[in-house]
Image (cartoon, rainbow, N blue to C red):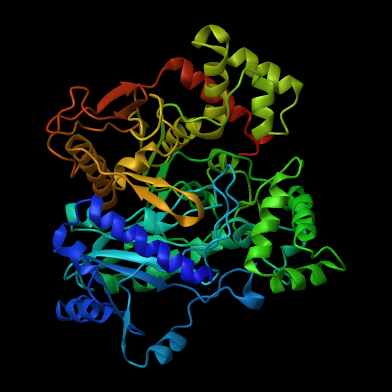
Amino acid sequence: MLKAYGKQLLTAVLVGYLQTTGFGPGFASAVSLSHTAQLSSRANNGDIVDTGYAKYLGNRSFPNTVAYLGLPYAEPPLGERRFRAPLPLNTTRVQLESDGKVVDATQYPDFCVQGPIGGTDRGGAGSEDCLKINVYAPVGANSDSNLPVLVYIHGGGYVFGNPANWPFDHWIHQSPNVVVASVYYRLDSFGFLSHPDFFDGELGDNNAGFLDQVEALKWVQKNIASFGGNPKQVTINGQSAVFHIVAHEEPGLFTGGIAQSVARGPTELAEQKEPLFELYSEAAGCDEGSLADKMDCLRSASISTLARAQEAARTFNITFRGFGPIIDGKVITDHPTASVIRGDYAKVPLIVGATSNETGGGGTDLGAALRSSFPLLDAEDIAEFEKAYPLSDFTSQNDRVSTATGESSLRCARESLGSLFLRDTKAFTYRYNQPNPTQAGTAVQHAAENWMMFKGINTGTNGTGQFTPMTPVEDAFAEELIAYWLSFVRTGDPNTFRLPRSPVWNDYTGEKERIVLQQDPQNSATTSGNVMENEPPKERARCAFVQSKSDKEQN
């Protein structure tokens, strides 16, 4: 039932996208053709890639762009593999199953089981057989093309997210000299169930969803050349990228990073997550016997049972709530800020930024708002925050609280990583300053840039997404953003292939300059609104203070 729902949803998303985002009437009409006719048409166009173990037929979404959708990169994490690290793809099995036939890769796959986005949503749609990757490539790209690669790791707080909602067809269409791969990975409790006794891997594995991402990067190293990509020039991009920068994973999996709105929530110890595990097990009806008995029960439970259990466990009044990455002692060995300060990180060129107004919480009680995100902060810490964030620096108490929580939870990663990366490599920082036009008010909220860069997308419940038609001015601004991003992918510098109308984006040196990314204030599609600005000294001082609290905030 869940698989059928996923296929219906993805068809609706794709058709709506084609109708509203400029793919053109020719391709939109092709959606209504019979599936057999589509396969025949695409095969005649030669949009087939041979990985050596399988031949995949892609979807020509633009005259210069092919999307290969839903390629498996690991073994399905089903049955006994639930809550365990992914197994590398058994290419012999895939080869035998395909039996020399071309495999259809023209439709988005089932997305991973979703957690809730908030409100009354309870999640649960999706499939466990979801360790797939979408590859977008220029038409005709092959193993001799040697094109730089972008690997996109979607956001969603490790709880929700469907890569079909962040398509890259138009990125390749704009710049047919890169290859893009977008990763599906396990979410919520399915990807991040934790327990102190998982360290030996016998009963389960901590950070399974993060290990999915690592396995996808390994698949890229082995196979992306077949699609025209250069495995020695890979840039990772996403709100999860910071963990790969500090993770102890195989060297050489990536050579650059783009970190958008880096989430600086607590990265807890497994011991701190044990109460969540017990609540989850109880909610699933698996609280009897030894840990091995509980795990056997959880592996036998239905997806719907576990979806209800993960939401029930999350809403209990416990200090550390929610499923996400932890310090596992293997891949993630310390809090990210501590690792970077110590110099234990991947020394690669970096773009890092945040939106102008994203926040970790509001209200008028600064201490309560901070403790809701960082429960280890004590009264002395809150007093120091009160001093570091004087009311006189803000327009209101609500603005003060919103800024304080936002800088601790999200914004200060820009200053912290920018400053620390200067020791060994080059960093470019940004402040995204264009509101999502479908949201009320003028605040530039979290992930506003995703609306612009991905054809007007707003994420809905259970893997859905709604695309909104964009104006010519918005399209022009999106082209600037994509050009900066892909220039960085191609050269490690956002300026090399920026659009002629776009200003130079200075790296983070001297006066700590950063770019402000925004539309032209005069609403022109031919003039850039992007400008450079100096980092405000008071903001810089606040973020230095926030960095000093990283041990208590566990970020």
